[in-house]
Amino acid sequence: KRAVGTVKPMLCETADAAFSSDDWVYELKYDGFRLMAYGGAGRATLRYRSGLDSTERFPEVASAIRALPIADLVLDGEIIVQGAGGTPDFHKLAARAQITRASEIQRAALTTPVTYVVFDLIAAGGHDLRALPLLERKAVLAAILPKVGPLKYSDHIAGKGESLLEAVVARGLEGVVAKKADSPYRGARST
Image 1: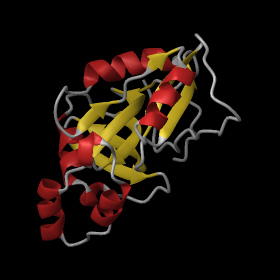
Image 2 (image 1 turned 30 degrees about the vertical axis):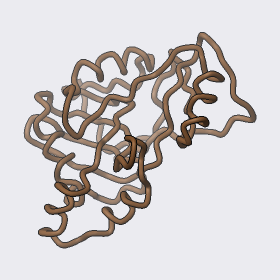
Image 3 (image 1 turned 180 degrees about the vertical axis):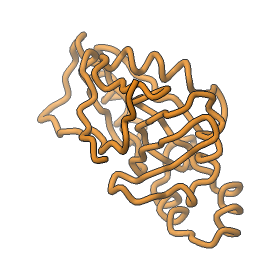
Image 4 (image 1 turned 120 degrees about the vertical axis):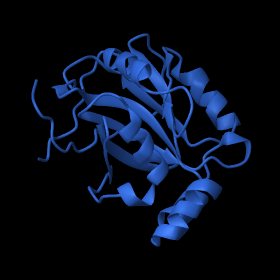
């Protein structure tokens, strides 16, 4: 058991073409802001990819992180505002993120709520999980996250990258992220 500290998120690389492989899983690419969440068991800190603290901007997510019963969680995901038909609306999210007055933030949490789509679990209970294969981390993550509320598990499809991308493009969504099913998490440790 060891403290993980602040983690820089693992970043994507752009592929030349879509592909399918049984060694890979495919997730939706969301049109939002990358967010690392730290806490659980009464604590919560939210940080953008840049490292800036965004905890006060998204109180509904911070409250949900605090409510998770496991301490020392480190989660990686994307914060979105769902627009028409459930698709992410980046413009609404950008407008929401610009609000700074506490009373307006509280109102926006009700009128324009955000969802934190979580796609990876970096640590839990003080244990660093980065060396575990992706699918093992995601299995623990799926068990930890509630089924309702502002935290949403980012599901995946195994082996069918090309057909998923086709369906995503047809719906006008952002894209697809391919991840090696047995890969460790390679985000850098910053503190």
